[in-house]
Image 1: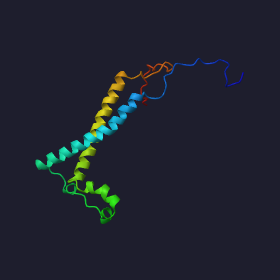
Image 2: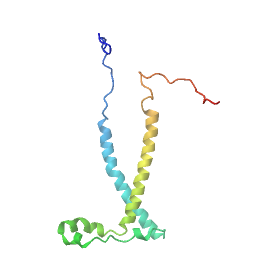
Image 3: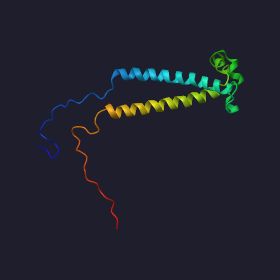
Length: 141
């Protein structure tokens, strides 16, 4: 019998697997596709509505994109970048879309955290010691 080894064997515990359920991967993939699509559509509509109602949108974000001539001289780059350069107010749409993505992501995170707190596993497992009931006062001289 060694100092740090024990002759007793532990029973295999019924610990659940550490991997996540497959459905959460599918939901995450859908959210990865749906949230940017919703954000881009909402950003486009927000910029359009703002321009119609004379919102003070910075002029640096308005207008079309001007790309250097090298992008238009080759056929591959012009195929990729010509649709982007034709979209009016693309910078304003991109900024509004990023704001919407952060807002939607934040709301989903708060909802998930609240749901996990209510439905999720308990804070302490079966092998944890119960929290101590001792309240320590700050020492004052």
